[in-house]
Length: 325
Image (cartoon, rainbow, N blue to C red; front, side, top):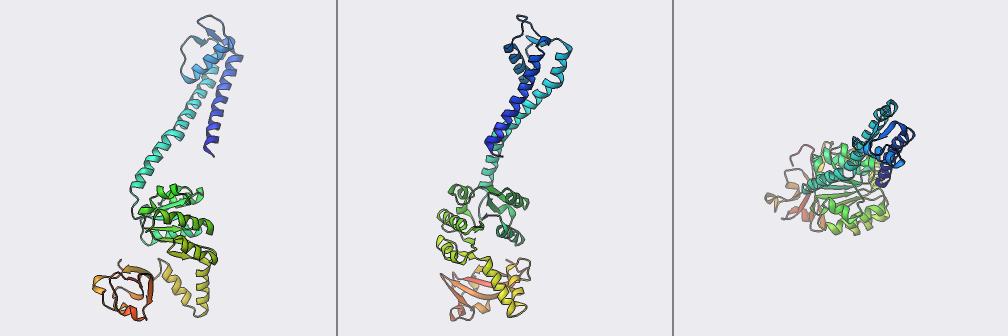
C-alpha cells in the first residue's frame, strides 16, 4: 500500500471512531450533566467526546445516567484505545521506523567493503546468489538490489542484504557503495535495463569488475561497450552444452561440472606466484593450467607465450573442487 494511502486510511478510521462516539453522546446527551452551566450543547458534546477519547476527562461534564456510563465503558473506552493504537502505530511507521531503518542502513553501509552487488534477483540473479554462497561467500557480504517484493523476501531469506530500489539510478548504487565492491553482477531481466545499470555502475566504479546477463546476441557488444568485462548469454551457453553433447556424451557433463560449485572440478583464476615466474604454464602444481592472461591478450597452454610465465600474469586453471584457495 502506498504511504499516502496508508496515512489516509488511518486518518479515516480515527475520524470514524470519533464520529461514532460523538453520535452516541449527542443522541444520549440527556445522560450528560454540565457542572458549569447545566446545559448540554453540541459544542459541549464535541468537547466532551474529544476530551474523553484523548484523556480521561476533566470532570466538568460527566455521564450521570446508567445508559450513558455503559456507553462510555463499552464503546468510548475501546475507541480511546484504538485511537491511541492508531496514533502510536502511525508514529512508529512514519517516524521511529524510518529512523531505525536509516540507522540500520548506515550501519550496513559502513560495513560494505569488498562485497558483491547483485542488481536483479530474478532467475539468473537468484541462482548467482545461491552459487556464491555455495562457493563460500559470506551472505552478509552480498547486496541484492531489486524492486520486486517477492524477490527481495527470497533474497533476505538467504541471509543477504537487500535494497528496494532502482539500480539504474546513481543514488541507489551509491547507497550500496559500488565503488568499494569486489564485483558487480547485473541480471535485470531486460537487456536495455541491464545495459543502463552497467553504464551507471561503470561511471561510479571505474575499476570494479562487472558481469552482466544479456538475452540477445545483438546486445552483447553494447554491454561490453557500456563497461562490462563479462557478458553471459544463457541461450548461447545452453547451446554450447547441447552442441557439445552431440560430440560425446560426457562433454556437456564436464562443462556443467566446471560451472557448478558442487562439481568435482572447478575453474579458478589467480595471479601468477613469484615462484612460478619463468616457468611454463604446464609446470604449475596447483592445478591444470589452461590459459594465461597477459594484459589484454590471452594465450592458451599450447601457445609459445605460455612457455614462460611473467610477473603480473593471470592464470586460469582447473582444480579439484576442494582445492585450497
